[in-house]
Length: 119
Image (cartoon, rainbow, N blue to C red; front, side, top):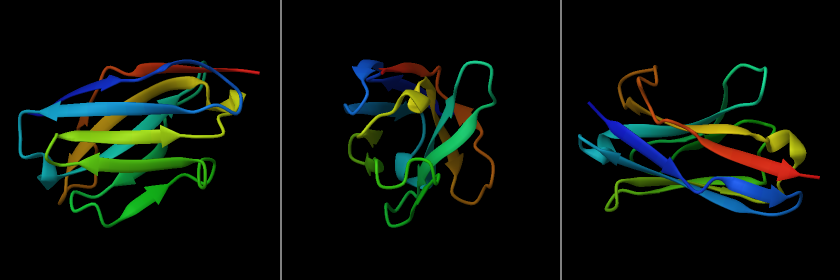
């Protein structure tokens, strides 16, 4: 089992920045690819970004490319999502997720953290 705890959400004005953190426990962190997803009110949960365990491959949703950066610190069992130039459309609950490197499914999820961007 992998336990994930997110932090760093909050209220920010449009154009501002936030950094989300997700700390994992329970397994060897570097064996897991980590992802961020978000769910806006009344909408489905969607992919935002992911990073492989080796930290060499990162993938982003088109809507956040150039504004968001995913990174990880395997020594701290933590993955980050730096969010810059925030827009009202970025308002959502953000979820951290983990999948074993050989799996295609994110099987472990955090409880989510609210990000609200005011215009």
